[in-house]
Length: 504
Image (tube, rainbow, N blue to C red; front, side):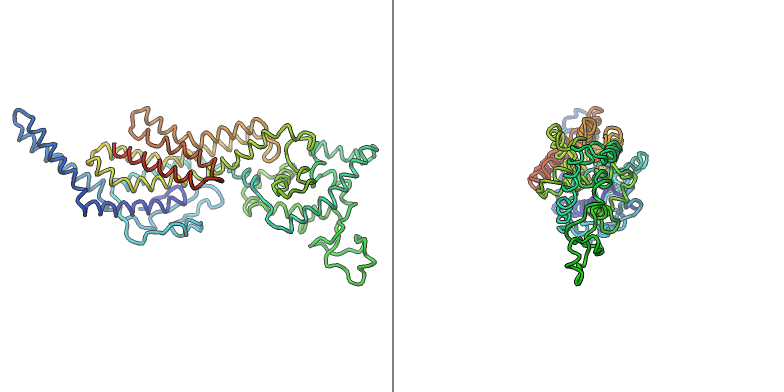
């Protein structure tokens, strides 16, 4: 019988947690600590029998027999590790994304977790009850995810564009050259034509009507491509373009020993399929971006906004295209100040939401690891009482069930983004900010809502993780600055709250 978990890290924390449970239980039995509850059972029975005025001995004997046999049965089925859990019996099958349908086992995921976590080589045993609890919990969660279905991870799409940097220094240099040799001359000519009211303005106005009033404010301007770029050539050789003497201002001098590469016109330099600058910029995105989100990057305006964002992320300090390509507003330079507040807010919010979403399954897996490790101590210290088993079972189910809750939040996120985002990568208004605020809240408080609901119904597990989940928001906010301190704080709070709850 196999167990399907909900994330890559859970593959390892599941095995490691129960392996440690097995060893801790052996330690408790070898030291005799596991048998201390029986002394308490005998003492309680004797004291209760002594207080009985009539038939105390008979009552005490029968009470001792029932409690003793009941405790032994609980230890055998719920506490003692007897059912084997090997590496091949734990698997993870992503339901959505590029790896959907592929099944992975510990040590063979192709992720960095394979190196970060050691797969236990010795045999691991799990109590029958807890094996059933985790099997049912994982199965219910997977079934719930299937009912919701897959949705495009639009938060990932926006975040990847927001965080994309041009890594190739040659592409950065070429970008600067294009601004100097193409964009600035074209813009100068455009301003001159605008002052003289030339015939070219009608063509440019048509492009402005189609692509927006800020079309002339960035390097890939459709207006400049249609009117100016075909008549402007690069003043130096551009790698990848064949030499053409008709495009070379120094063709007489270079006739004997022509350059390796040519001087293309700016239109070809920007748009060429094989060597064009536009495609080179687009290639800075992750390799799987186009395949995963092709249905959302399906028009010229959206593609333009992707390229604009990549250029603005370059942070190269060049005064020309760095300003000309940012997406503050529909009117380029003149309305930059009006959108500074929104822009800086989103600049902080995107990484925060992305970090929280990425941290959630890791924190979930580590919480399960801690619960499995603390479980034998809690069961012994609770004197093997039934309410402790019930509370722990609800607790394990609830933490595993978080995966369904977060999947539901992802579905909500995709729906809100499609409803409230005016565009994916350009100027974002109040609707987009509202969607970000809602999802940022749900990532943290939706799992808490489950526990508040349990607490309202009188379930003991309902008040165990409030402090832990609130720290997830703090971890997302400070992930880039104080990730070590935040993780340490979350781990400390986790240890104290889980231990307190399980003992009660």
